[in-house]
Each structure stands twice: as C-alpha cells, then as structure tokens.
Length: 441
Image (cartoon, rainbow, N blue to C red):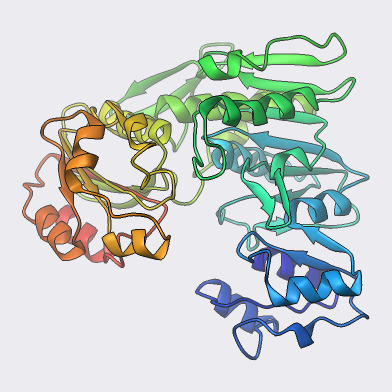
C-alpha cells in the first residue's frame, strides 16, 4: 500500500494515508516523500467529501471508522487490485498467479524487459534489485506486469485479488493449498484458480506448469479461443555449485539462481517474454544477470566452506522446493534448515499435516514458532508435539524461544555445512547478519 501511495504521488496525485502501525521501510520512505501521517491510528475526520477516491488495504477491518465514513459519504472506494485495474484499463495486462513462484517469475520478466529498454508498468510483491518502488503506474507504458495474489482484495471485497485484474496473459505457476483461514478446503482454494483460468479472454494466453497435478485439473485446454502453453523446468546442467541453462544450440548460459523451482520460474518468464516479443537469444542475454527476487533463496553470506541463505518460504510446497534446491546444489555439504511458522495456515493444527515429508531434504531440520504470535493472531495454543508429529520426521527439532534457536544454530559444526532460514517473518528479530558472519567465518 505504501508503494502504491508513492507511485501515485510520483504520477502527480495528491495522496494522504493512515494506518494504526507503520514500520520500516515504509515509515522512512513515506517520511522522505512527505506522506507520513502526523499521527498513527484512525480518525474519521480525515475522510472528507472532496476526496476523489479512497483505496483500502486488507489490514483495515470492516468496522474501520475511516472506511465507514467513506461509505457514508458515498465516496468511490477501491481495493488495491481494483485501483491497479482502473489505472491499467487501457494496457495489456499480464498477471502472474500461483501458490508459489509468482514473485520470482514476475521479477524475472521485469528484469528482462528493463534490460531491453521496454516500457512497462508493474505491481510486484517484493523489493527488486534496481527498482526503487514495488509499484509503477505511468501513462505511456503499453503493458503492465502484475503479481496476482489469490488472497482477498479488501475487508469489504472478499474476492481474490487476481480475479480483479482481468488479464490478457495469465500464468499459473502451481497450486498448493494455502490460506486455510480464508479457503477452508483444498477444493475451495483450487476453485479460485479455475475461475482465474476461465477468465482468460478470447485471443488470450494461459501459461501453466504442465507438471503440477492441481494445475492440470483446472488449466486443461477447454476454450478454443485461448492459447494454452504448458512449461516445465528449463534444460540445464549443474557444475561446481553453479547452474547453467542450455539454449537451442546446447550452449551453456550461466545464471545466478538455482533449484528446479527456479528453473520452472525461468521457463514461465521466458514464455511470457516470448508473448511480448522478446526473442530467445535476447532472453538468455538478459537472464544471466538476473539476481532473483529479494528473500527468495537470497544469499546472506558466503564463506570458504559454508553459505547462509534466507528465503520467504512458509507454505509446504515452498518449503520442500527451497530446501531440496539448496541440498541438491551443494550435495557434499551438510544442510541445516530452519522454518518459522508465522502465517495463519502454518499455525493451524488442521493445516499442519500438509507439511508431512516436506522437510526431509535437510540433514538437520528445525521448526520455530513464537507462542505469543498465536495469541496476537487470536489462535489457540499450539503444542510442540503437535508440530513435530505433523512433519513426520522423527529427528525434527521444535523450538519456541528465539534465544534457544540462536544458541542451537551457533553450536552446530559449520565446516562444509550450509544454513537455510525460511520465514515470512523475522524469527523474532534474530540478527541474521551477525549469525551469518559467525557461521561463514
């Protein structure tokens, strides 16, 4: 939301905003742009009849006093995806959906387009190298690349975000049940992607992971007016801890990312770029310098015989893909991997069995969660034994104290060993930089 505010200000709009809590980097960036509210919290007096529109984020509750005042005044109220659609109504819209990989696919597409000086707008869910904002809206760009989240649009619009963008080119990177607090069954979750697939318009394109079982159930070619393109992992070789793509001439193209999931992400990005007029040789030329998306298998520090990576992974499919990728990239090294349970789904006992055997790749597997997070999310207490049983790994270690976690990791032997930390949170403020320095030194 703060990125959208900055993008609109850059476009020339007069922007005001509010929130009950504002953290870094949003606080500093808003302050630098003169957009930081004088006070945190909600105040209905901020909402006046002269406002052109109100854009409401998912953090606001339906009884938010500012939202209610906007409704009373009959103001135009947009959710984030509604506004992005309105701002890009006259553009070609490319929407990247899927339970996993959508940020990396979107980031790769943006990298390639920028490398070749193409004009484009975008909305992406992570800070990308070389891009100062996560949202860009201009008048002149003929296309927009949108990361299509399946979560709900706003407290007063319970539709998934990616249903509102009305894509011309759509991508489904894979389907793996998530957001149990919103989609109570796997079938209900999968149905949201079926709706997205069926929204592909006449002469539109749907690009999908042809090997994903759940995607196969909804992305089968059923509309003769739509072009369906299935993809798999890109042809490649791995040598000396480095991954190389193979082009049509079997020439090796070095890349900075690794793992089968990233090779699938690159294939998806390549198919999208092809639809946008980027030739294969030009794609390969650009992708060699693609650093990956922030917090997606992001290298923290490298030493002589160890590396430390962090990753945003939290869902079962992401956990399995990320930990397997790092183990396969360095098969001779011991892998210590730690997952923080931080989301509503991951902390729900009904969802936990989805993690069965998803954490088998590491040599040492640790699951961390903070009981206070459960209380903050208004969830019932969770027993460590329940977590351990769900993963179906007898040697799994479950830790609920951040100091104990740090001590456990520091005590591990780190010669010829790598560390992977996976979370959508922060491990309760764990000093990852200091830990990485100790390990790699």
